[in-house]
Image 1: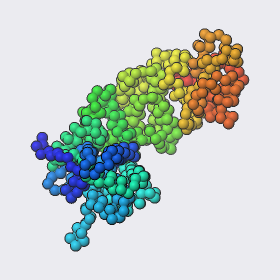
Image 2: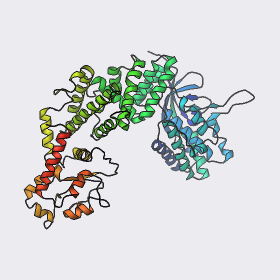
Image 3: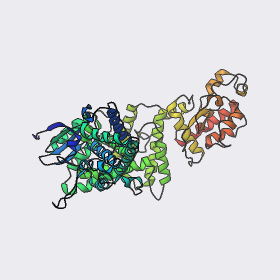
Image 4: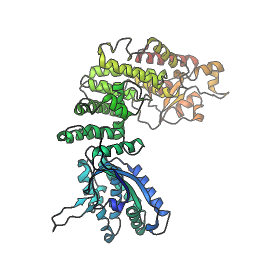
Length: 560
């Protein structure tokens, strides 16, 4: 265990962004990820604190920005283990302020962004903060260098996610600062430089810095388990290959998106563990996946293939000369399920059979059936995870039994009976399943070509729940018991591309069809068009439709 000295102290920003520190973001760090939401919160909080007093900036209460963790010896060079987001955002804010004050004032800002080189001494500009290699030039050109902010407004070139965040945050700050007067802009800059403090924690080696980093993360600060695992995995790869594997990691993260990339590790954990999470994702990935044992193999055989698989699933982006459309349709159907417990088997199978579209389609069709079946049965999370854990074991150990009748991928006879009973009963009150099932039906009725790009989708009764006493409905359904037994069944339901309206929902049948179920004389839903084609909505018609729709679902999911 390292016995390196750990030093911690509070410093104002004027000390942090001085010749005492030359910050670099190491290659294993995640990209800059603060969005305008976090940047705006910081700015608004700083401005609110400043505006609570009209006195001298020197008399204001100190404002604490949190901590940063550094690997730093006696020289100014410092690797940022934790604190990249704050340092980068503060640099952006100061750079924007520099562009929005008079030129004679602006020159005072540059010292906090970089140390100017001296031609006579033969020294070059030395930047206070250098981002990761992929973003360093962009940051220098568009943020740290004078007039760089002006480049961002018309920037049309392709940028990374971190560069996009840098640009959007800079433009946000510019819009906010535009609202301030000149003296208030200068006062804000003075407040940041003189009265905003960071706790700087430094140690000369990675091990002790990483321990501090882990403790801070456990307390809910910036870093995620994917960031920590990145440091561990890349740190255990030979130095000559670290750049290559860092680039692979970051490309996968950029392609998938930061939040989904973080979720990927939870799915990988499930693929290896095959049981419900008992501790933290980080602990269980370390224990059951053990990515540092053979980090190159983990990257090449696990992380990259599974990240690619998850991207295909979430973006509906699978490509193949055959069955691609059908496979992406299965992904779309699976995403209607109200949980993502089906994702680990899908990722594993995709990563194993990516080049076998026929086998993929066969498996995904069965997986969609299982996922929707468990949803309709209202299986709880423990039941779902146990079932998917069994499926993962079978995928890895005995593919010959994957499609047998006793496979965890199949529905049991009792499950099929219970699903049919639910679909044939009072279906509407089961809120979590009514829309996914109705959309599934509509897609089948439309030949699988329907798209649902509507802001609002709702399920509506044809026969109203509470028809008026003198209405046409009461002549068709005079018996209250029969009406109550019928009103919530699938046969009495339709889809709307608008919010529900209880008053319109009680209109008589003809008016309801013309004024409520259609827009410009048509409905975009095949299942609703069925209703429009009927001249009346008698009990016999409703029962006939109930049987037809139920038979369709029984056929789609092979429930008999």
